[in-house]
Image: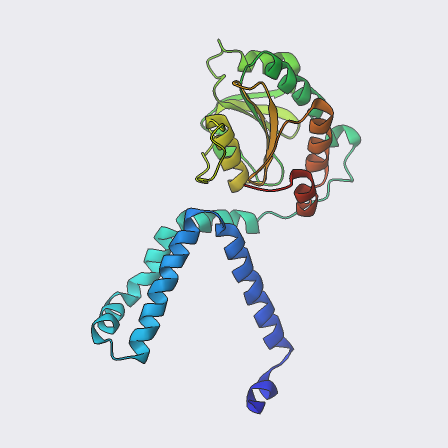
Length: 265
């Protein structure tokens, strides 16, 4: 025992700390997703394999040795979506935007809020996506490029039921409407409220894969919701929406989002 503590150095402590952080982030990433079930299954297989080494379970030990070289490939295939998401999160760094002008910090917030509640009154559904640190270009490719300044009139025209792109999402980049009619990935989370339709699931799905802020206008209920980091804020009024968007877009701080959003999905 003394030999172990003798070899324990500051680097050993750092090694343990980094490993703990990695394990925590993996568990946080897969929480409440299908990956949690996969990890449980993998864990059971590992227990069986360890038991085959400790006890004379010859058949299991032989089978494990035959497929050992393929395990890494199998894990990569099973967790390909989660690995891609994890890498995108690693590349995302909280960036303070306090140095920007107040007009830049309030990019389109007033117009987006006005449009959202005007559409809600008319029971017209809409998805308004506002980019933060993770670039959303991959979602623009399937939409219609617009590259226009944000205006209530243009957004109302885009989401009008007679518009050919009203079912898709509008993506806002750098204070401009980048594209309309964009399709977003649907969430795979199963424990959602039954009242959430395709728009809500698309908003949650995008917020799980990126750090974008999504404003959802419900066609059925005429309500406006804000979706961030896989969490939903319900029944927001115009003032609350503007404050929440201003905080989210001016300085992306995860702890601020938790206070704003409350319980995630």
